[in-house]
Length: 169
Ligand code: OFO
Image 1: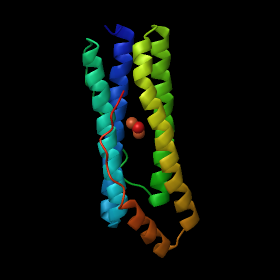
Image 2: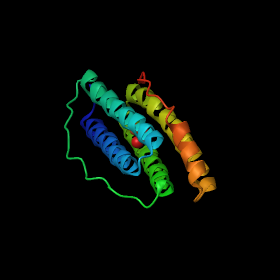
Image 3: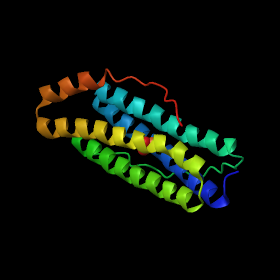
Image 4: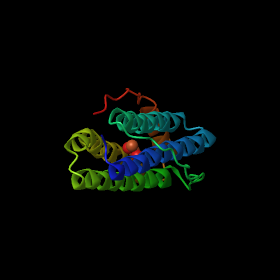
């Protein structure tokens, strides 16, 4: 059975993952307005991944005999200055999520819940991958600057990203 303290921390993280889904859905809308369909696709995959992250924890809390308490999801930002501005935001956001996963693991350590720690290892590795993949797009955007043709090439590239349902835990 999961401790109350860890249950609360998991519930907060479920909220953070759902907020991430919401934020990327909002960014997807921004790219829809710019008609950059490859960026739209990239964000769509991101939305699905965040949903899977939230559900992975949702299922885990139940599996451990705990109670999931859903909380209000904060309103995300709805506008950005440029694709570069969006991806700077994505990287900042993923770094924040990494720190939240670390804090959640600190709680698991504090209550000596090794099973939860081993479950959360997957999320930690996922954060390393997420930061690397976002960092890749961000550095390309920094090179592109105002080159519209290069931006369209990147858009084509981002159109190839596909969602693969993760096996969590
Ligand atoms: Fe759930 O990894 Fe991004 O936020």
